[in-house]
Length: 236
Image (cartoon, rainbow, N blue to C red; front, side, top):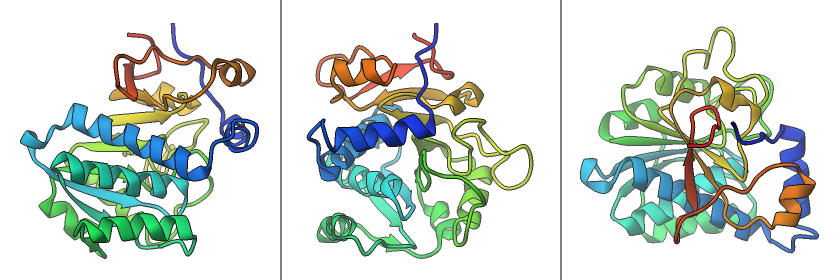
């Protein structure tokens, strides 16, 4: 039996509720999401398997999650590199970038070239709010992730995938199948097309909120912020 999925519309409404009646700030939610992402990377690709991690960050909240994850990874002993071509002018994102700069984490401008000197990729380009065409400069990023043999961890959704229907039928992104996916709070409908190792992260939602949005909170173990589930969202 699979975990219930959360549509893009429901996920957006849930975020708003968490920041209103739930009393969370966006900083908190991003910090918790990024912490979950970092734990997935540590679980599937510990530093002794290669500690160079390339984090591709989009301009929105998904990219912010990637910036937070990179900071945690740096403290775990990884050597992250950031591709963040469309930096937000929002103060929160600027502070996240400054924190990485203070840790001597490099920012790069050429993603396809940077792939040649990394061991693992974090795809934090597009999240549940993505729709439409992939705009510049990200087509080259999606294409590079499609073609690489390196392990890729996608945050909430493989970038370029439709949240409801999964990968495009043809063209850019149609052959992008990352090895790892972390669904934040709850799986999204696209997971029925995902074949890799799948995790759920976001250990902060109350049972009342989960009941209202009709999804289940997985059973987190110990101090873990993540739970591994079946590729399509099934219970293991």
